[in-house]
Image (cartoon, rainbow, N blue to C red):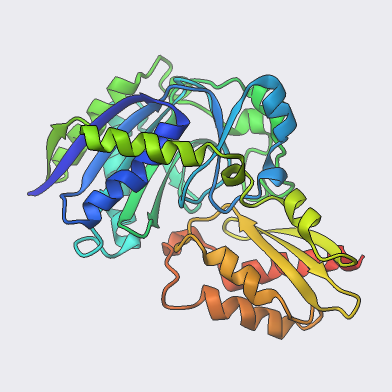
Amino acid sequence: MERWRSIDCGAVTPFENAAIMPVLSREVAGGADPIVITSVWGQTHLNVGWFDDVDDTLDLDACRRLGVEVIRRPMYGGGTAFYDAGCAVMWGFMLPKDRYPDLDAELARFQPVLLATLAKIGLGEVVFEGSSDLRWHGRKLGALSAQDVIACNSVGGFLNIKPPNLDLYLQVVHVPDDKFKDKVVKDMREYVCTAEQVAGRAVSYEEFRDALLVSLKDAGIELEPSELTDGERYGLTKVGAKISSDDMVNRISWRRFSRDAPAGSRVGFGNHKGGKLCRAGVAIDDGGTIVAAMMAGDMHVSPPDTMDRIAAALAGASAANSDDLRGRISSIFDGDDIHQAEAAEVTTDHLLAAVEKAVGAACA
């Protein structure tokens, strides 16, 4: 029987939620037992993935005008998501690397735990599709993913429990052209569904939380409920202040990249949909050399500087030399220190395809 600490965070702001992982993961890395956290969104906001190009996915001016908060998740990947207050529940398992070293094994282990949870609350028709999505007849209900978050390994996800305000969402979002390339349902309004729609009744956070905890116990995990300590709450406040900065939100931004590109260079951007959406930006000088690059996308890769390192490696390459471009990307992305679950489905060739599309756009 495994022993885990269990924390019910209840309704959280996006800043509190984003700060929970770095604060608690340090404790797990320091020898504490695994931790399971559950929560529900307490504030309407847009949640940008660590590697996402914020300007490719959002209209920040519209967000400010309509009062929609925007944050960027620290370290954690995936795409940009819209969350209405009370419309989605979250959970996360923070696992010591020495005891749980294999991301794919842990993802495979907890998929049936999550499906058992959903069956308990009337969502037995929901299945896993693609790399991590929870879908019902092709419509996305939530997701479960695994990622190395440096201090520990993490398995976690979200579940839509009631309909968000998609009219508001569609006023502030840019849906990438390739977003629905591999989806059965092609329209955002049809693509997103909720537990309420699947079950035919309201599904509460408390109902999901309790069902998840029972499923974990059924899987041989002994849970010790606890509250956040005063020290942990202080840590959340401190990390949350950093997350709220404009510099954090604009960490990856095509507008900023274009503004800062060397004078006289030609700038282009390209998207490529492999298993996940990959995005690249390049600045090319008159001699055909890449003088600056940007790498982005909807992906779960570790360490957090992976895409920044690839972008730096591309500087100095001949934009026309595909073999050199691939070699520079591979020298980073295929290294022993780069970690992702196989189900994440991002490869060197996917990233290269995005770079070559960016080169084509810059040279057009």
